[in-house]
Image 1 (cartoon, one colour):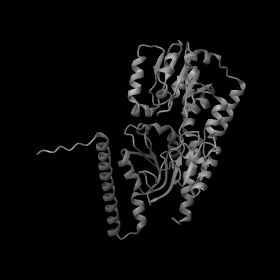
Image 2 (cartoon, helix red, strand yellow):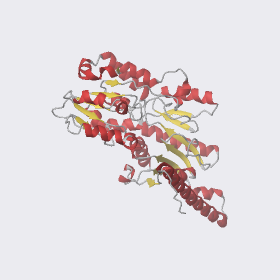
Image 3 (spheres, helix red, strand yellow):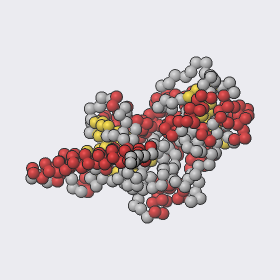
Image 4 (cartoon, one colour):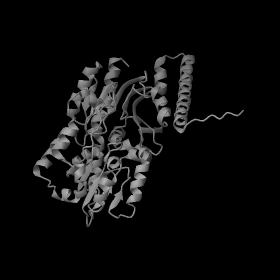
Amino acid sequence: MTYLLYIDPGTGSMLFSVAIGAAATLYFLAKKAIISLKVFFSGKKSGVTQSAGYKPYVIYSEGKQYWNTFLPVVEEFEKRGVPLEFYTSSKDDPVFENKYEHVHAEFIGEGNAAFARLNMMTAGFVLMTTPGLDVYQLKRSRNVKHYSHVLHMPNDATTYRLFGLDFFDSVLLTGDYQKEDIRFLEKQRGINEKDLVTVGCPYLDVYKKNIQSIPDEENHPFTVLVSPSWGDIGILKKYGEALLDPLSQTGWRIIVRPHPQSKKNEADMLERLSARYKDNPNIVWDYERQNIYSLKKADIMISDFSGIIFDYTFLCDKPVMYVNAGMDLRPYDAYDLGDKELWQYKVLREFGTELKEEQFPKIKEVIQSLSDSKELAEKRHAAKAQAWMHEGEAGKNIADYMINTLSKISEETNE
């Protein structure tokens, strides 16, 4: 009798991921063992073990989408002539396009393969945007002195998945307002206080320079930018045709910029909508890596709870409309804040205009009736002052903190 073994695609993918992770782990354990044996037979002390694989400063990037967050830091290290290791999980990371003298870039794989490498590295100061240290697959290496998380958004620091920031040694903030909620959760959960340092927002510093270099359009058509988040409560998935049909009939240029995650998780939805509007010249789809070109063209933005609202508001100083899709906070740190309202919701209500589903059929009239008042502009400026501090100085501030922190640690341990 012949027996057939069937493994469903999901289970097969998981098993493959585990196998790759295990292989990577064995590889790096073997590599570490070889170094240890060399040190043992040389008769030298453990300090040499550290020097053999020790990296004073390491940046880990999950992918090329985070390059603009790290770019000002990388350039600051290069300018100062300080060696920096840049690990990335993107083979085509923009870091490889630059010929740096003091910055060494290396592709370390994706997923479990990358985590296996990171979990056993020997380093002084490690900077990353990846949350969930010591919560998921990413574990603290006992040979790393300091882990730091740099925020890649100017909105609330509690919108990560549960315990996203708990076990870092420091968190680098874009604005002072983010400290209060982190301190609240530390006290509530009985965990150690982290070093909270407001450094600014590096990617907004980059975007500001880049967007200013884009020339204004000749014969500029009135443009609406639809830029949602992803998932069940993202406006593109939740409303789809109900929102885009009336927009497509306005005669205006409508730029639809799906969240990058939608291409991976909502491909069927994007295919359906693209096919529906393929013959409509008013609908333009934007999948560019950088959002600044669409931001520059837009006269008004429609979004939900996506952080791109703040990019547009702070860089372009133009009106926004938001659809309150009702974000479920239970999987996020913000849920443990209790009844406290998130800063981003509060200020969005102040400088934005809510768009209700029943207004969709008359959306052209709704948008035309909006007036960008002096009061709305003042609210936008106030939000920017709170959330984007130290404008233009993030790269310098982060490099200063990394170097000063490691120097202090070295002094305390007499290294």
